[in-house]
Length: 285
Image (cartoon, rainbow, N blue to C red; front, side):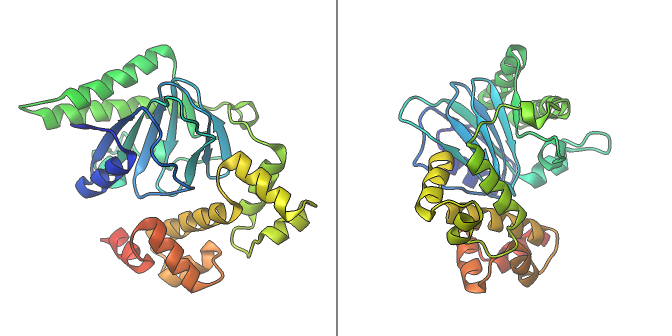
């Protein structure tokens, strides 16, 4: 399998082949706002980094950290600088993982299991870091006869290892490695608890007894995105989840918290690449 040098290319290739793609990156591509995509993502940090915002959680990034993100979770790397930022990103089609799973082994578990103690980050030990890179090298170096079988078997072993590690990653949330401003944490919690209702910057400022300019500034400094862009990304994630569960477009619109259908349609189509109706049809096909 070819090792790519762009996350965007890997995502597109994953969607096209309905399998998986690997990108090895050394510098940050053009910064992306909070975003979601139809592929699962495994993000493995080699050099460390600054900060990862996934849904309403901030995580610090150290060498050897692995982040497990599903297709409904909005995410963004924040506080990225111009230094070398080496990482390996796998874009994985959910249907491919389901096809590889068996009655006894659910390789999809690490992407779908989200209880109160779940963390997106798993800090790999040195032996597990070596094992992870061994599987990646085996996949990307496979050539010639039976290369597809070698790639698939190594990929399955990689997922088996990750599922095993994530299942035992039960550190309490208060002891986890993500860091954030206490004020911004409260704002994120409030937004996610009230995502189905109208939320404005003015309303947030009044609720937290802060000025509008101040609340916008600290939110942008902490997350790397604006309040409105974050809210839109979360609502699109919710709409996608409902459409995948078989809800109608109108039901997804109503449950996602968008107050205006036109805004919902435009935001969804821009973020996902297809209209809500087309996405719903693709989800059931």
